[in-house]
Image 1 (cartoon, rainbow, N blue to C red):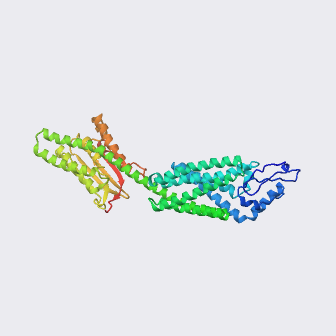
Image 2: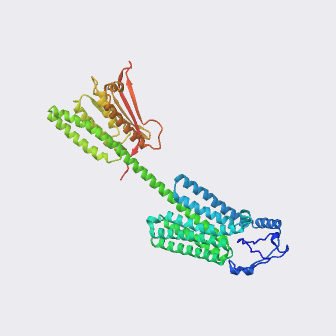
Length: 499
């Protein structure tokens, strides 16, 4: 009576008592051997299950130093695996997902490889699955490694040759997995399995060496250095462990490789954050410019109407002066429309020029005063261009135009710590009366211009969302009669950069 032996590749080939011939004999027929040299080192022992478990526990405790390193090592990989998948979930970045898959198969392979007794717990009476687990996990480990390397290098754009070769290698690896499974489940002791696994390992070694040399000779990005250093350490540890038969060398290679790749991923994350920050700033600039551009046509349209009124009345001298000032104003508006910031002095000059044009329109019927805090250097502070103009325009057209008697506007620029406080005060008819006199389209346009300016100010302070940056206050006299409007703007105090 013979019984074909099922193989547990790790350290023990077990046969239960009920399968013994006459309760005490074993008949072995070794047709092929996975590692031929090991046929002379086999030992046959009779040991009970309880003694086997006791011996395993004693050995575990006796090799405490090895087990401490192993637990620390595997625990570190497990922690890094969870962290990597977490980063992948938060940032929706496929790179971290691929690295997490690599770490997962690394943990699956080494978790059993470093503790052979675990195979009994995992696979029980199905040792052939233990055999398949060992071979398949280490091959798929290489599959995810290649995919991660291609993504990390951005090989599609920077190293197209590596990208194409990597894709081919990935399909070949999957072919090796299929061949290994067929070999194991058809004949677990076949030498064909040894040939398949050895061929796959040699292929990966050759791919790693050639890839590293290619990157060194065609270095396009610093990421390539991390791949070269990390894969070299992993390759060195793998080959040393294979030659000397000690998996601890592989552990050392993996630790160094993980450390190097960790630094590379961290630097890559920082770079992407910086790029994202720069992109956001550029988007904000474009948005600010768009908002500013939307305001300018409204502003220019009103000025053109003023010039037209002089021309219709045939007041040539006044129209010429108006046109000269308006041309200068337009040049400044066009110049400043492409700027993100201008100096406070330039902003006040534009406002003063605008008011001069509007004073011509109203035939000097209102006064305009600008007062700047003496502690402020208007040539060193910068503000968004034309940030005050919509409120000034609103004060003139809808506050003063319908008022009888003295008309005046005061503009104050004050120091408010880390902000500039700009106060625009008029003695016009007030908002309530203006709303009753101006309905429909004009009111809608006026509100839109002010809302756009409010958005521009809010965009300057992404981090400081507390408090309203634009406050409009109705002014009343002692008898509660309207006596004007006050607008308060709070904008960041930004110093001009020295070029």
